[in-house]
Length: 363
Image 1 (cartoon, rainbow, N blue to C red):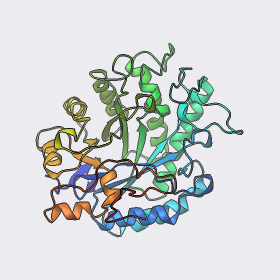
Image 2: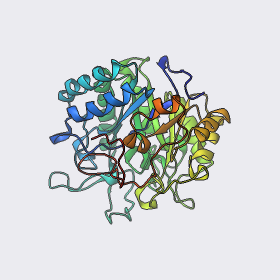
Image 3: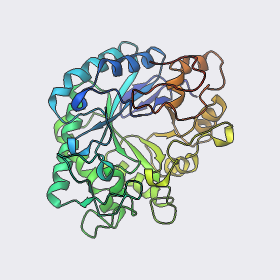
Image 4: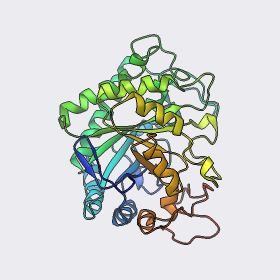
């Protein structure tokens, strides 16, 4: 099943492999996408990745959360991104851009001296308490995301992915841990997902009804007693589908929860696909394709995820950092990725495999 094609909102994808969005640390000043990013994604396209999701591009400078992060907050980025999409499309792969606002996890700078979130809930990992957003700030953020979707479309991407995971702004709206609002933006699932519905409604006014809008969503915050978790995550997924999301990538964890989202030391099939139970529940609740990310390493586990109804597609990135040609290797009979999930690839000098034995470095 891994090599069968799939359609997502009319978008034909060659196989079930997704390169999950991961910060590259390769953007230029002010978020400008660089040729080095294009090099990375052209190589993945050449090696038959069905869908590449480039991460994660901030929609407003106040929502930047890391150095060397890509931006999509101005029309001047359309041209450089168009060069990247053109390079990918030579090989038949599809490419989406993930868009984000850092929210309570944004960088504090002299120009942006405070962070924003739905509620003033202190971030225990940074010690920073964000400002609760005003109605005007929420409306501005909706417009920022919608304009970013327009730019993604103009740059020739095949789809856009809203980042609604890992504690960033949209994720903090859907989580009861970070959203304590009592107005139309809080309490019920309908209200906590309202900002996403409004982003999609406004974006559709500019790009029409056919451009695929996907989402990467937290199924769990990693705080099982006070954050988002099952079964409410299914209600959130259903609300996203109703709002117009055409595919959901299931992930989990926020920075305060520790190593939940990118677990290290995956060395057995039992440790793979650690968000599988959430993906299966969500897949049973929605009619749109579901992508599963989280520690996938072996062909057998990936096939099981599709054949047993956990997901429709498998998302991975760390293995592709070490072996960009991994999908071709799988097709030729290799059964397992070399990646050991050491997480040393998260390199502020540019994402790369930094394990002690580097057999196939990207950079």
